[in-house]
Amino acid sequence: MRINAIKLLVIAILLPYSIAAQAGIRAILDIEVIKGENVEKYAEIVTFDEDRFRIDFVGEDKKVTNETPYIMTTDGGDTWVMGDKPKDRFYCTSMKTSEFFKVVGDKVSGAIDFFNVKAETPEVTKNFEQPGPEMHGLKTTHVQIETSANAYAWFLFFKFEYSAKVTEDIWYTPDVDIHPVRKKWLNAITQSGNSIIDQYTNDYLSKLPGPVLKRKSVTEITDERKKKTKIQEERASYTEVTEVSSEELDKVFVMPKCEMMDENEVEEKAKALFSAGRIML
Image 1 (cartoon, rainbow, N blue to C red):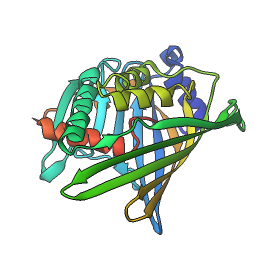
Image 2: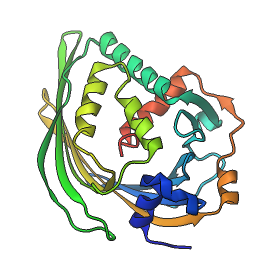
Image 3: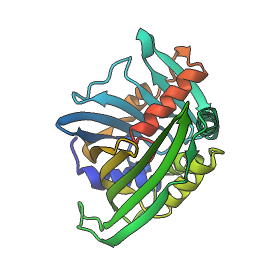
């Protein structure tokens, strides 16, 4: 049964004590990425109840197969299963949420040391915050957040220097809380062990006290030596929300039987999640 997308999302995802009356929810997050004249569209299918949460990363056609990449938890967000299909084989791994982000933190720290990168902690600034339009019966707050950072490294006799700026227009609702599974995920990001990641995520999340309903972002990355800037825009919104029966949920949340990822594959999965912005929203 098709129902009101954002309102249902708030009732079911963000107010877990209301879920008892419903079996579960499936919501589709449509994402559009614009790079110059190139427009890429894809989607995330989010399926959940009070303790189980799964995100399938699908194309524009929104079709899920046995080889669709995904992340999933069945224990309230303490442990996540990550599945992917590199090199024509399907892999999966199960890791505790906190350990996953410590692996990420260690890899980032190792890369910085190996390439002798000098990186500054990103500066997160709230440009403005004002009442937003009502969305599906809910009050919203419109906040614009600007993140800027600089980094450089020496390779042989050449200095590579980059600056980045991300301007995000975000509409969140202050009326409800965030789902406990999402809270555990976000909290783990702030405890990766890498000071740059931890401070940045703490600064960023402190400016978003409520769940995000809509987001638009513009990313500018400048090669300071060549004086060239690449610009990318991204838009994300929830659509096509439906109720899911308990029987169907049990089929969705069956633990997989597949080959285990090695450390490099786990690292690549983490990079993909970060680069697509899938960890933060």
